[in-house]
Image (cartoon, rainbow, N blue to C red):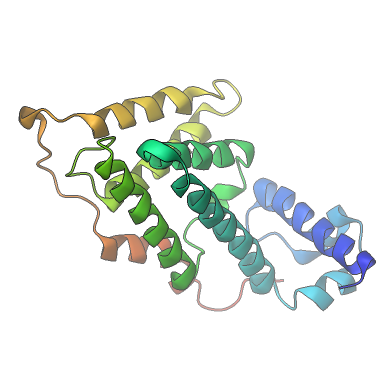
Length: 209
């Protein structure tokens, strides 16, 4: 793309994030164009529909989460899983009001790539004794969901409440006492796939422009 096209592309994405945080993903494209300071034609030349714009935001978000996981895998001592969960929580905190709107919008291929990377982080943590052997991928992903809930609930009042909550979760993952064996069922891989794609599957017709 030409330099001006690149600038407009980034302006539209930045504006879309702000508008979605305020009004949700059903916000009109005209509002996004106005916030970006470009004409509606400029928006539609790059994104022919609202669905295409949302898909690009989701793609970027999933790519960044995956790249963060790859970086965490390079950390020594099996601490990558903890680092990834903390990084995800920081993203939710930095993008509060926006990131949660994209939950359930990912395509299955991107979601599976991320799940495989998190699986690798989990196995690495187990190998180094950082996490107990009965912790599952479902446990890790629901911990990430819990961080989002804490961040959304605490709002601007307790912006770092998620840090202690994550510490509590990680402490539970490290417990090795036989008396503390987990007895409740985990969220399965199939359920994770269904949850990650439920909004996409249930969206039906394209969102109104």
